[in-house]
Length: 326
Image 1 (spheres, rainbow, N blue to C red):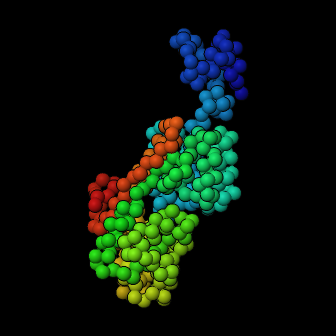
Image 2 (image 1 turned 180 degrees about the vertical axis):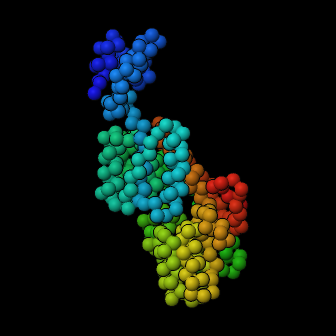
Image 3 (image 1 turned 135 degrees about the horizontal axis):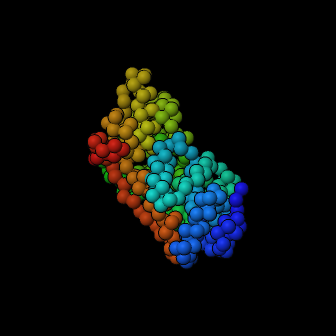
């Protein structure tokens, strides 16, 4: 297998000149470039990627920590990350964690060893304080409001959309509302914001038996509906953590020929349009794309970008693929 030394020897130029030609860094005359590239082609020389990364200080890889992709939140945000990465000639390395702190620490140590040019944290199990300590090793961007922490963030202003949704329900004299979450409040920023906003509008938190956690898939939504039907017969609405999940909830009531409570989803997915439910659109795709750009454009200070979210009562499908209109 040919080496960079072989290219230098046959072309008649120094190793440093060959390296500059390969990495397109520094001045190399046109004559030298032509001769070196001719020899590279002749020898079928393939540059050592690790050595090239060491010379440029870039891996052109971004790590994306995500617990799983069962929740459409993560698949949508990942689509935004990957499209932005492709446009910038970067690769995305998926780093699944299932909220395991030890696994997430392993990924942070990889950042410390310069295995990625930066990390995007879609959701996490470790405290923000520990994430904050790894900022010195490369740009880290969180997809949630990191508050006063010295961490870059791109996040949805879901509180405004939740406020609009709960006021809409309150005006309709709706009081008995159940909530579905993937994780409990205190651990999940989404669960915390949802319940906090509900309390601000209604003056109190919902009863414990109307808050179901551990729901991340349509099948889990189906069984959550079964639980709610047993313990809350006077239920008026179910506020879900995803349109797909709410579709599972709806299917339970349909299968058992039960009166269907009002339903609200999240994510603005095609399933929500199909069953005609109101939904929260947090614009996850946009968040993913902006998070990638923030990793690639680090600044001296911390940046926090808030993306507007919408409460959509009447969903409609646009003729353009993969898009919706309100």
